[in-house]
Length: 239
Image (cartoon, rainbow, N blue to C red):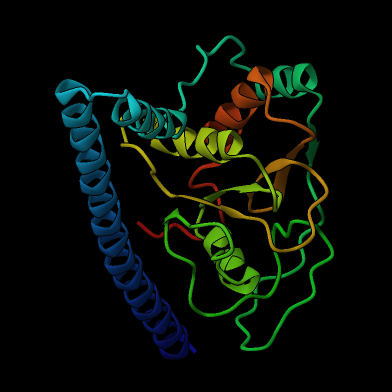
């Protein structure tokens, strides 16, 4: 009986090691993509500076440069200073709803899963978890994969399709905030919701969610507090 239990434990450790390796590789790929984006942004800024300093006879080059610069600035969202530390207080002030849906299971399956909670917070899921990182709009991971990420203690920030660039940029800026000295983006995913979520923005953890009708300053504090409370609190810890 003990040998059977040992074999089960060995297989579980092997599966977790394989998943951790997959997460690490995906994270490295994401970092490379981010670095590439920074290089492109720097090139745009340099070109804008050159156009501005070089001047022009009719001012048309200056106007084009100003347009490029404002586009770059619009993507850089400055977060408000945190005012409310407590999750419940921040959620109430923001008009957000905190929910703790019933657990829906945790079996590995290969088929499409219909979840009761929206967005899902638990349930049967694909054997491969979605990687940490920021996903472009329209390129969200499948729900069966990111539910597996929830099981590993990840926090998922989601926005409704059609959300403004400012809303998306704000969630990405929250992704970049440090968490208890663990670095920016620690065990987080940011993506466009693909389950018909009614809220404008939301965050999920295993068995928990916060849903907000708008992303005001109080909602930002609530998302910060949600992340602090539930990061790495899933039933399985995977680095």
